Image (cartoon, rainbow, N blue to C red):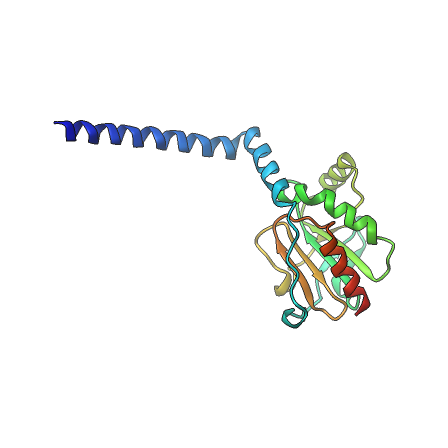
Length: 197
């Protein structure tokens, strides 16, 4: 008799646990509480510095052709930046990890924006009016480009944000999926090294 009572209690406890678990998942996915939780989790992840590939292990970008338009609706092909250091970030205004790393991206951009040998490309599929409002509201002035064609296979990803730091010779020094601290000494030191190549 005790065994049957214990089994019923275990089943009831398991059922209650499942209901609570489903409720928590729904809270995270479908309410503003979940959005804030995702943002703060992303913010924490954005405090980590991305890994830098050793020079001898760097994959070379073989195809630079990627059609984009700039914020003035002018055509831009990534191949126009070949031979320069390229900082490429694919992002969206609705993406919590993208938003979390934006302050560090702005800081990095501010440091190198006047260097003609560094090209920053912040690529998105979001509508221009949405991006303009986001940039104005947040006080960012990053060079946004709007995706017009599929990226080269080496730059393609189903996940955003994804960021690449590409040297003058096409070597991919950093390939990072997810948020990171882009204003760290490790990143700026890597850019400085790439500028010397």
